[in-house]
Amino acid sequence: MRSIRFLPLLVLLGACAQTPPVPEEAAPLPVKIEKAARVSFQPTLTLLGVVRPSGEAQVVIPVAGRLRYPDRFRAGLSSGVQVRAGEVLARVENQDAEQTLAEDRLRLETASKELARYQRAFDSGVVAAAVLAQYKAEADLAAQRLAAAHEKRSSLELRSPVAGWLLVEKRLPAEGEVQAGTVLARVAAEGRPKVEARAAAGDRGRLREGLAVSFAVSGGGAAGIASIAGRGVVREISPLIDAGGTVAVVAEVTEMTEGGALPAPGEGVEVQVELDRREQTLTVPEEALVLSETGAAVYVDQGGIARRRPVTTGGRAAGRIEVLNGLSPGDKVVVDGAALLSEGARVTQIAEPAPANTTPGETPGAGR
Image 1: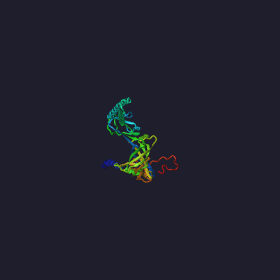
Image 2: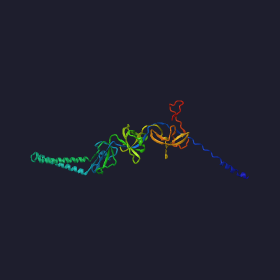
Image 3: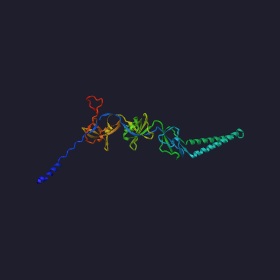
Image 4: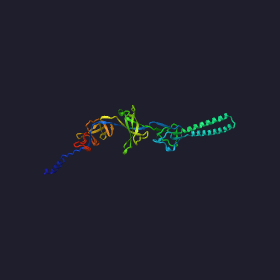
């Protein structure tokens, strides 16, 4: 009876001791594969630059006074506004100059009246020629003083010395008091502008004078993609490395694309330098690159297993990136889906559709 009593317990313990089911192995992840091969490759180096004019001229306030603007600039001067040579940008009202002009005008008027009176007296034979000559000299002196006063006043009209674009670092309000020596504005002279950029010191060895460059403006193309505004050539590379570990690169603009326009002087632009072409270079699509704290890497298909390969990258161009170390010709690189992989993951290659001109018996994607 006792053995019968413990029989349900034994059955329950036996059921708990059964082996758990083995989970099914994860299905391989479908990925696109590309065989690494050496090809001719022309990398590009992208730098950030600032547009500089071919020349500049400063407009400096000569005397203290009250600043007034003509109607065109009634709200003040602004950067990027195009001006003509000799155009009046502002006027300074100086009380001393105005008072001197008024006094000299009055002196000339008085001297002219006296001269006219003594001229009539001389014509009537009342006064001698020496007396008339004295009044002529006084009238001439008064006229010279008035001319000097007018010239001084005209110097208070601040004109653009050259044709170009305004560069205003500090806007001065209308009717405000200004001091002598204050810079009203700079004028960027018309002509071929230049672009000053900075490159990492490590890239200096890849740069040289004469390399072709393109200037890209953000948001100028469709869907906000950067568009090429112009082209040029590298003219100067500084031999000095600054405290930030960069070197100065100066490129001259040689042509503008149809409908393209560079930003105003002082504004930024992207500089794409076309480096020397390299033969027998390994490259991969940029989407094949996986970035992490340990550096750049790619995944290589080894018998259906993804293996992570650290790589050293170089230049970029047309959506591809140069691989200097870490890959060998023939390696099967995962080019689509790499971001979803981890070391040891199972992968399977996605079959690519056959080209329209595939001949019977030809394997799609052969040679990749």
